[in-house]
Length: 364
Image 1 (cartoon, helix red, strand yellow):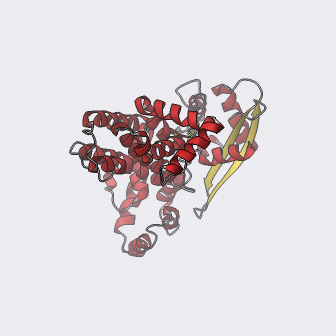
Image 2 (tube, rainbow, N blue to C red):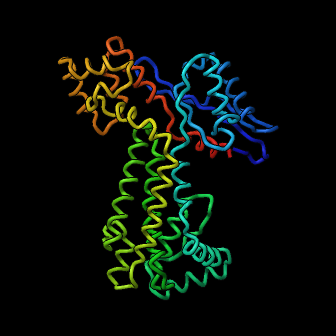
Image 3 (spheres, rainbow, N blue to C red):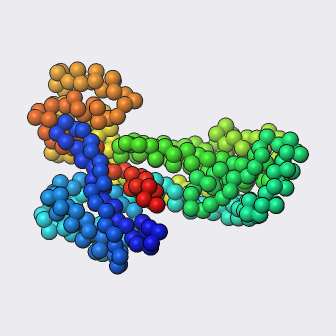
């Protein structure tokens, strides 16, 4: 990120797991970059941080990144890290792009210009001029409207879009809006709910993956329901439908949802690649030993079949709804060293750069 003095600031966070599966995450270093910020420049600073903490590349399990200079194939930081691991004769780590930052562009990719541009123009016209704003509030009071104001729109915060569209739709009796507004207001509200869940503290990568998978399934459901004008999960559309407004533009809505589904498929391809391993980490009882990585196959069989681990299954039921980390603490790391190492890998992954963004916010 860039501070108020236009100096680029690079934050490097570490997330690790000790022998007892206690998670530690901390700011390892802050580098002020006064020159260029190429992938090579960033990689050199990361290398300095690893050297400072006396850490080898073979300890690295996953790198979570965001930004053009961080992600890519060869000359970016990801490419440099891959090469460093190859030179050290070790397998490359997982690379993830921040789940939150992948979700937001999916929504922005959907063409809402026919609705959003007029809404933004009207809202900003009202809010940017004090006289207009006062007169508009007085008008709403005279109309006995339940709402007393409009939400100001900013493109910087994606959540702002959902709030503006929702508030604008709720005022439609005063402004006589259309079906597309209702549909986008509903859809963006679903997107905002996902975004807020992804920002939860201490989410494991499997938690984030589950949220993304669930949202994909919701899109499929919405797609099938809107074709029959079933608006049980599109509340603003349902409101218009009850009042016998003009016919719902089903083909338009279907196109929007299809486009959104494709964006989610493309942007979360890196998580899909690791889907089987994530599922194994999430529930080691529900898997076939033949389908898991070879280094843990024997341990999975013993883990699932050993009668002693009926106790562990009891522990599994007890921790439902709690963090998965608590379950893996029950494992005997001496009896299941590879399974323990496998669990540590996924516990140590940063699924998002949320912690980094929080730090930048405090710095500003």
